[in-house]
Image 1 (cartoon, rainbow, N blue to C red):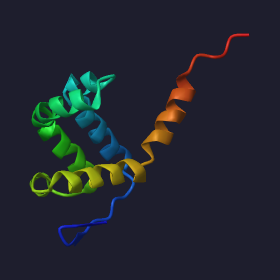
Image 2: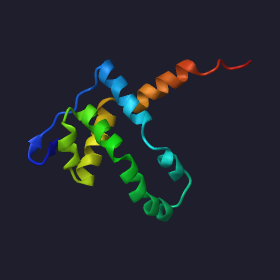
Image 3: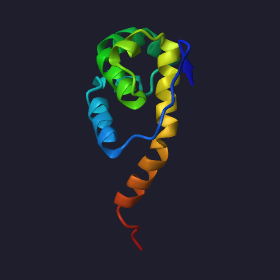
Image 4: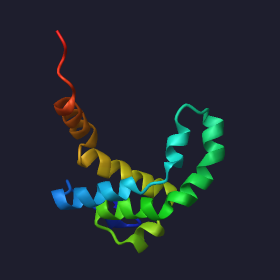
Length: 111
């Protein structure tokens, strides 16, 4: 993908970097949970405060996943940052990993 005329290749994260990424996710403000079940209008009203509260963590997450410096991430616009975040998510196949882990730790079916 190209951001600000710079070609950026997102690669699957090594286990150590993945662990670092999960720690950064853990530090995101709980306010994101408050968006569950609200209308789009309510979410849009709350979003500026949520983004302001979580900006350092969001920058760190994108930096870890992309390999870019945090200072570079801070200069991106919202669309560029979102594109990078989604690419990190897709390349690392997070949804499939979470499904496998959830299935592995699910209680056995009762007969």
